[in-house]
Image (tube, rainbow, N blue to C red):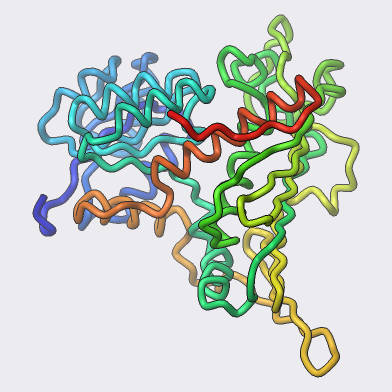
Length: 360
């Protein structure tokens, strides 16, 4: 593909996250053009096309994949459809941006990896938190060795009242694959591995999941439309410890509903190194070390003129597609996350540590 060619992009799924992707792609007109949008609810696709002046609208994603003027697709559909649509897209010769989580379960994620292998196409998982300005600053210092060897990380996202759409696809395991662990826990896992900068593979997991509030219709959040005749068969809180091959560890806690102090509810990551540590809290962060027998902290935050993490992320995947470069959040990072999520669910059922099986 010529470096001067604008990429044709197709959006599969006209919901909220599809709109977010379109909005940010429109800020990069020199790199791409959004050619078409599809959604089984065709009226939703038509509204999104009218909102952003997108020329072509389809009900079936297969019609997007037939177009020769579309180089890449962004898959923004419910979790259970991730694998079949991603595989269709790869087979059609398209690059793929696949919304998180990679798939509804580990088996489906393996199917994606098998289809992607040897395809010559690029796949990326759009974990936008990697492109937060603070994330990039921490990553830069870790990569430079300023914090020494990173041996432990603690990550959490504890929503007190955040169950989305009780009774809808969000809280139905056959539709979503799980609750906060697969919804927001996957973000925290992905960013934690990224910030730690480790090449060491995770080897085992011990975890537990709970459904103590959602099952009583407590902890209801403002996102999504409830269906009180539906069901809640997912977790509302999950906790885990992940051990790495080099002896490092990660502690993870995530919830949709938990009797937690709101001051401790924001997503956060702390990484601990031999020469220093760092804490990430979205738009703000801090480095911590010790010098001359005293503790020393350096605080920093996102500058006011920052273009935003989603624009940086969009530019990254467009340039990777254009120049045939591997993205930093590639298919295998998505698979790693799914492997760990699956192991946490397994460990919760058995009450035992799960040794990770990397065989495809």
